[in-house]
Image 1 (tube, rainbow, N blue to C red):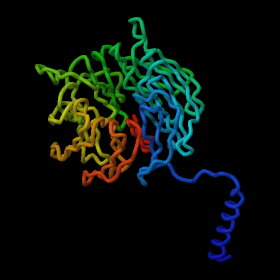
Image 2 (image 1 turned 135 degrees about the vertical axis):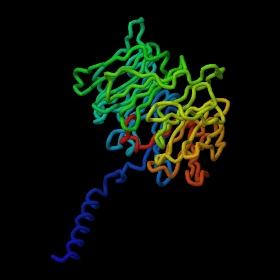
Image 3 (image 1 turned 180 degrees about the vertical axis):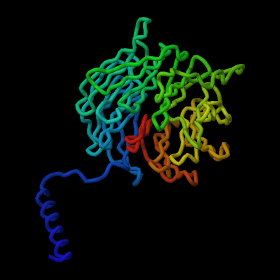
Image 4 (image 1 turned 45 degrees about the vertical axis):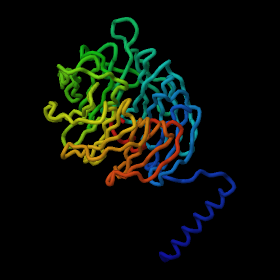
Length: 396
């Protein structure tokens, strides 16, 4: 049989297969790598978006209180797990635009993570304090880990991330501790506790290679560093007293450390209560520079290639975004998208960034080379933006 006839035969078979299913409503066949979700915080809904087409595909309703919501993705990028402030954990099929399952697992939660193998989803809780871990397929409870630190009520849990070795790592706001939970055997979690790490850890991140877990401390100037390659060495204090002798400003919104920028061998970090971005050497974990910025930074996020860092701010400066050129450590552009800039998310390779502008009910998409807007999309009080590329990144 010639190549031409083989091709005709394949075409005929495909045509017959399509015709056989023509009577049924078939979902459109598509990949998931250019998809994502946008949180509509006031409505309790999420938008499913296409980053290549810069388009809204569907709106998913019934997700509860999304006033402080975040999300992670399954390894195949089909399912988003949305963590609501009301303790809701919702599994969303972003291809069909439907809720698969929703459980209200606490009274007040603050985010979550998905395990290295994608089989477990963990949720960090304020009330009651602790972490609950669920089967990613069924949302059945696998483990309940109260954050009991010996002072009565369990501590609020913050800074929950996934780590290599089937681990979850998180911090205790009230307890001043870091806990590491090994879920290699889901039936027998093993918890390692690091005590007296500092006062009121408010958030944390894990480096992109999964080695360093870093918690910011609200109750004192400094940060707590845990080397996950050498946990036996304990927690090390870094940037101790970086604001000593200075008058702190009121903190209207806590910095979010998930968005710390790692670029050019340095970490670009939001300073608590200051109009500054701190630059830290990853080799020594010492401060090497400070960059004055427009207001108190909330997210400090690096473009995927590390050449730029984009910064948004707390009230009263939350109408502004500034762009830092990493080699020169200088601000090269100040943008004013509008009041209520809450989140930013780069497309997988960083040619564009999506910015949520809550008070203008829109998403603005910027070209990051020209640092100019290319389009706008309507959204009802948008906040968090999460693209499926996160499925393959540690800590996101």
